[in-house]
Length: 417
Image: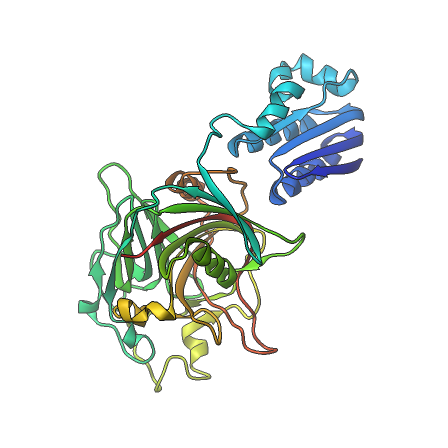
């Protein structure tokens, strides 16, 4: 099989020749998934030079149609008279798979429901942002929980764990555990984020798997938080971003910096749904309810017992939901209670932040204006949560792993009260 590719912004055409059987079906499937990863919103398959197509090949076409439908995209096969056309017609899939030039060309320009209030385009150094007004005058209420000062050398006790009720509008991050009764022996507190009515926790311990709870009926997740930040309210804007240089990615710090500049916010709640080219961060190896044997958990070599740190970028080609807060150093006097919970996002910079990420296998998500709860909910409903981690920017010269990087995605942002 041979596949030739033709690109035109969000539109891609694949010209396929040879046999589309079980042996080559995976090759075509991979080409389609590559198109999705690279941001194609409409895909046309030219199978006029395919001499044979089996049920395996037909399955690839049906799967592709569903994938593009899930992101409000367009997919179709050119109406051909050869063996491919015959199989499609005999199986009754003509309406589903055959490309209607008039319908699809108009859907590329203005898909159903695409009448959306784009306030402006912002072209920054590292990314191009399409800005959608959600609730421009909205503000995010915030509160802090617990005492992060003990993180370095102290031991957390039973009274430090606060049950925190989560609603559909709650955004939160910190250290927490799923438990109804605090016990040093049974509870393994770890990185936590809450978003769109779901709480995800990475229990401390190398062999522990990330777990999550979602609002179901009258059930409300209520994690025990050692410390963290809790926000409530509605984001003011949605920023869809694409990296403005081919085959490049942008760091978390640069994206947060440019998003805040675009909105002219000094302090903000920031949520990302994005495709990664790699993450840099850490998770706890041991629960903070255990005692520190030395002066600090972060002294070498003891830090190796407490933190699992990524020495290089991990989770490439994944999709992440990221929750965090960011503020300029110039605003620290107005947010004194928040200051113990944030750190400089890079050396010699005025941007402070704290971000956690929930990691999932790659799956495409819709273009243009999307709903936060719906988009995040679909990730968790897949049951494929891989990890929750605290994101770091390791910008040490030579030996540093760098910052987490992304290729495209969506950013919901709202100013803090």
